[in-house]
Length: 171
Image (cartoon, rainbow, N blue to C red; front, side, top):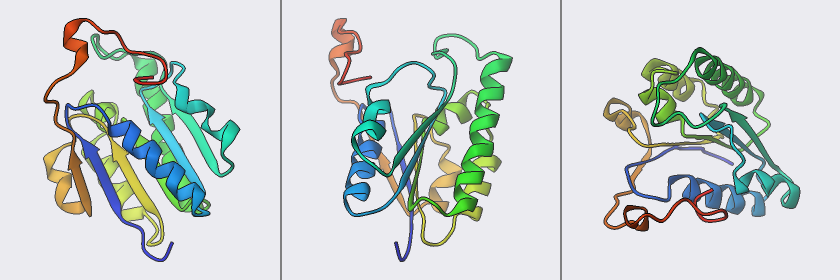
């Protein structure tokens, strides 16, 4: 890639991770190598199988379990710190044309990573790497540092009618 940009996908609507995965597939089909680091996720998600089907996609998880309705534990902080260190290493390596940090804003919301941590990732991003960050509650103060900010806004969702997350659709 000649020039890489910084994308933010945030908001309360569905589709942030899905958009990032779509971008990952498109980039791979164009010959780019893609790294997807999933913060706070430790459960099995269908997209983890991508690397079995598409060469050039690497997915790693930096989480243990879903704690969204609880408080994170020390192990959650450690997992996020491991993810942050790995993200820095991946950016420094320049082995990947696209780096996706999925749910990093949820990790920030729960104070597992800081706004300063994220800003430092922006600063160390090589010029030719596309950096995509996802998650609800992206801090507004980093919007000006990004090149693209998309907010997914929920208008209607079947979850409110009691429909649980479905394999292949939500996970």
